[in-house]
Image (cartoon, rainbow, N blue to C red; front, top):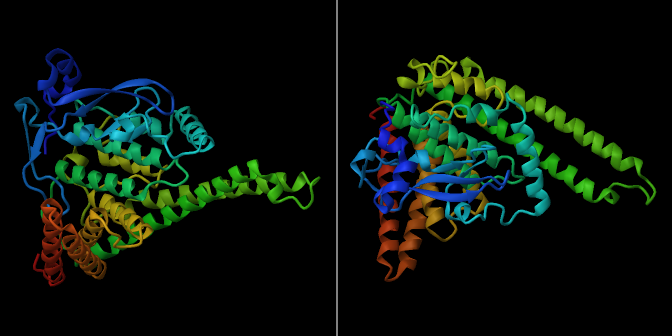
Amino acid sequence: MSEAHPRAASDAGEAMMTTGDEHPIQLVRVTCPVCRTVNEYETVRPGAYIEVGTDTDFRPLSRRWTHPGYQAVHPLLYFTATCSTCFFTREMTRAFRDGETTQGCKPEVWREVRRRHLEELANPNSVIRRLSASLWPQSYPYRTAISKLLLAVHCEHLLPTPSHSDLARWYLRIAWLFCDLSPRPGVDWTSPLAQSRRDWTRALAEMAADVERLRARAAGMTRFLQSHPEAVQRNPDDDLRPAQCRQHLYQLDEHLLTLEQTVAALNADPAADAGFVGAPDGALVNEPFGDYPSYTDFLRALKMDSPLVAIHEEDARLRALHHYKLAFDAHGGIAAGNGAMMTAYLIGELARRLAYFDEAERHFALAREAAAAAIADSGADRSRSALARHIADLAERQASRLYDVAAGNE
């Protein structure tokens, strides 16, 4: 798929200032919570386009913009907002626009996030700096949208407790962008090579998540010890023990960092994805990207320093599945509400696409169960019952396709 970006879209900010409400892109002024820069972000005006058809993972198949000059523009380019000064990136939500990014965070926690972000920004070879240097919205809008989402993922992991639902949603959209940029025909998920590659990639992703959780836990213990040294003192005059514990925690973080880098190296090893049935193709691997032979080569090099980077569509889907499951489990499974119903369905559909058939069947059943409960509780609310019936039908249909895939008929 071509990444041609029409001039009308690249000049969206200027167009908004000269023609007013008729343009689909509007400017929103938001103060960066990290460096306090006041940015003017481009965002899509509500009702600026309609989606025409959706895939079974809710990826829009096409869209129709109200302004014909924007027909080639991908709205996910505006899904996240990146600070022009420090490159801190967040999803363009109402809470972000209203300056509520730090709500719910203790001041000392947010100070630590700010410190870590700015410390990494000072390193010219850091992940933040390298991703920010890959933002070329006029020349490469799809790749820029992917890089911005990866920046959002990276920034989210600066928080002591990253949001799994946010990470899942962002990785899923990265998968959509990979698919839109480089569509491929169906693949044989039942082949031994596909299964072994997929299991290897998933194991590495889970290992990276485990190391990440350990680093976050160690950082939390360090902060706690700084505030409460008495917790480890043998007596009120024992100043040596807290200092020793801080040193041990520092050494632990150094070891965990080395382990994280080792896992990242395994992830970036070409053997990990060479020949993978879902490996990227087309424009992703054939077109030069900056100083790299391709955008895929850029992502693979970046993954050497960050296990959070997804380098192709199936890699992104695996990560989305991982975080959707963590988010689903954290909320107790099929809790009441449309969110749990939709999450259960998406887990099933992602697992189906990745040939984890038992997992897919189990979550499709949970989605149908949640949909039935929602229908029973909806009463006269037709919109809610319509959504629940739609999810129930989708889950039923996709569950029936599991056996076609397993039999090699899809």
